[in-house]
Length: 517
Image (tube, rainbow, N blue to C red):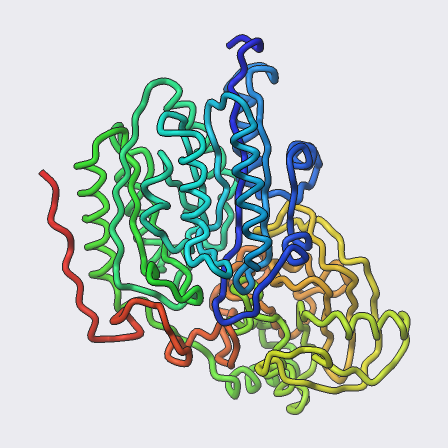
């Protein structure tokens, strides 16, 4: 392909997994994670450890490789905005993003394609379907003939516009999300197919099935993973992509529910029938989407035993109810209080979101001691205060590149951070709210989960990829405590979630759509 006539592809995205029960977020929260405009996107891709979503990196690298010379592919970067899961985006900021996308596309000149790197479970103040808004905006501006390919998180809540506006719909296959780069590669390959003349057809079937997020892992032996793997067996000359999106319950939308979306190479009948077949299989397996959580009392008992008996294996606990990766504040103290009051030894906690506490640690200095007030400026009622006399073991700038897990190879920014010690507990405290995704988040402070007797992480499931080399599944426990991402779905006041829905409503029934002929 001649470099005189490069393929010009616009790149944009809005990536926010939204918890409707959390406070709205604005530009500041996006800048903490990744907010890049225009050429900032292409410059970041060149970094050894970019801030950008790995899907954009995979898409760009694949386009450059397939189009032979660098001059044969011309990315047209517009804006990419990603935040740690949070409450709805503030209306003014989201409308700013929409305007930036609209103006960028309209002023880009002739385009050969658009790549949308989206999350899919977004909300914004005044917009109940912001992802659909983005998808429709793109289609309205570029018209019906420009290929539009979208990649999404497998927790996307899929609206009609998210299926009708793009030409190809591609969701992750893994949870923890270890295939974001690969899905970007797939997006590029799909677009190249369309440049070769392939036309696509999309079909989607939604189930009244909203599994608690701890039931949505994709490893062997998990129902969600089994369904995704079944979907991959349907790929052939007619079926380009099969995406099984479980949705994100805490968005509390009318489109919540596991959704099977199939992209075919022009055969709508086959796309519909494959989606229908997989939906039937998913519904037949619904009873496996039940939680099996560990009580706080049992967690304390096991932690005490591990701390006093070195012959016992060490343990990894997760706090799925306070998962920053689902909109949790990352600072509830239920487990910390219980472990401290019980006298647990050799415990490692992280990462705890509390900027004022970090500021107090910096004022005390490394080796300093002070009376710590946890959650001194937190307004959420579930983030209860806690006090302890602590020693500052480590102060850092919070920036590092992990070797393991979902953020391997990316730059992580915790903000100013510290490691505090009190009693038998060490706790990593950060300024930029996020979940603990790997042991790297502790090693950054000179601590190590491998050496601790028990470790507690603020995460729901993504941590598993970053600790798999240290803890087999049978030594990982999900603790049942309150929080904004509690796995006890009965504890929330749902307003928009379709009812009845399984397993929240055990009596839920469903009839599959009529097959196409």
